[in-house]
Image (tube, rainbow, N blue to C red; front, side, top):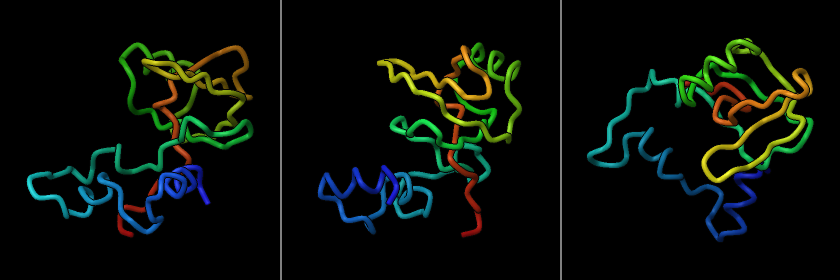
Length: 119
């Protein structure tokens, strides 16, 4: 069970109930449309409670322009990295990676896996 599924169970939400984002993605929310080619729908994003040792993909998406330039300088989009620690902040959260000790990157850049758009 993923951390997100566990949190849903603890909040009393059945695991098979769709999230709002999933319902929008599936066209079940009137008045909401999405661009299925938008990269935000291509990934299962990394939760902020990911444990040290979690493998995460640097997506090359999201964050401010400055965050993006900094990450692009040190990381390769599509590559897997290992989470060393996550510092959760009020405005943004930072991820330190085993492969880049001493550097911190905006957590919004990382996903657990790429999602098959056809399924």
